[in-house]
Image (cartoon, rainbow, N blue to C red; front, side):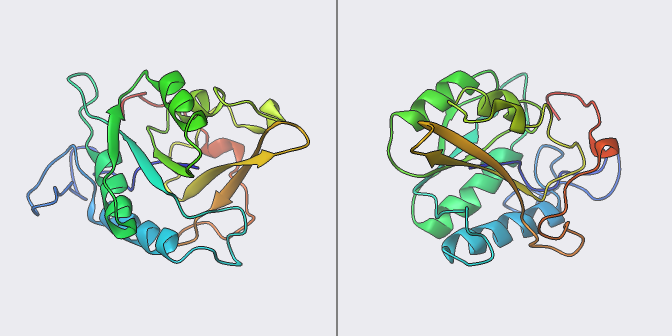
Length: 193
């Protein structure tokens, strides 16, 4: 499963990012982002649920590690909240550009995985998996959507993964289940946002 980090701060103004100690930090989640991380931790901690039939409880969480070029701590912050709720540490062994390495690490380990990745390169990451219908994977993650789960489920007959996009529907304003993104939501953005 792949998710984007929780909501980020505004561009040059509120809402501001807040680090885990409550200090203002532009590289951290906004208050709504922290709320989403907590809601996701609750969701994953209560699985299985009939409302999310394709979503499974992760047995490990992988999150993008910040670097000199990609300063965001949001992936790690989101992943750490979820991993802590599930009783283990977040894996920060990978960073931007390591999409093929992440896919290999997931494929060689039988545990279910949740990858918290940058939305600009999540489609690239997903395409490193054997897919039953590669064209089903969107070419980009909608820039304004923080409320999605991309789920890969093993299809024994195809010997490949089936792709599904699931609306989280966890916070006020999230898109209801089954409602797809409109094409005008897909906006080109800075790949390091």
